Length: 405
Image (tube, rainbow, N blue to C red; front, side):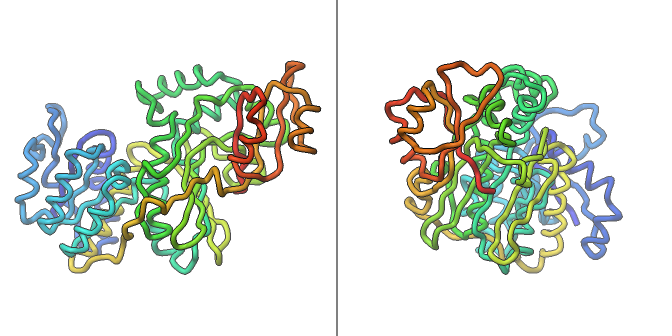
């Protein structure tokens, strides 16, 4: 079976490599078919690449090749990836992708088009890199009502926080190390401000609850305000700080979905996920908590997920998989700050007496070198709006939600 790859960067080149190096395994999985890469689309030149004969700069070479039935889109971004993908689907070709930004923004439209034209649009690699999560949620957990999800969805931020926690590095030094090691881009904004995790939350929420969630509906906060002082205070009570994407089900017309730093205690399966690794904890009403863990990015881990989707699409060329979700609504994602109750970590310029007057009995935290006019504490469960009201006349340095995952 002829296939094509659009985008020959880290993931796209890995897709070609996995297809070629795993031919015998793929043949078993497809029931005898091999995947033969016939076109690689990229505007750049690769003069020393052994696949020189396969390269094209003209998208129409793929679109008009009737023998190509499955295409991997690893270009990234919304355009021209959306335009190319829609045209391929309308031409009767299945498309698989690692492009989380495209799925988060345009997934509903592309899934509807795939349904209309009897092909498949698959995106296992768009969340969690090499971690299987899309297919397990859609199939293995199909008998569950999903109550909620919490995930470490970005390896760059998890690496930075791990270095702050384990090695006492400042945020700035840990970020530079991540860039030096190739874990962070020269412009790390999408990672450290939480935008990358936000897109993945959109996909997980849409899949879990059957209605599309857009990035502008997901409140997003990154890790740039986390300091070593916060790390030290939370460590004193067995906690670590992680950037989490969190999703909570309320009813058919109401969920919460957001990205923010969170205090995770040592009993959680998420607490010991370190370095560039990702983990996604899914809470079902029948199965309880299940956790999916592994490399959240990287050439071959992500490529393995893309190729797995290509194999799945190859197995379903005669029939379409029942897969996707419906339209959501403007009010579908509610303001988590108004409805979700959790304890909070608070650091402020105040005395313990002043805090007790505002909150009653709280758990005060200590650290080496703590200034005499600074307090840190864990509150009882309350909404974030209630917390802000209590602290409105207090010189607050930082607040972090304490997760119950």
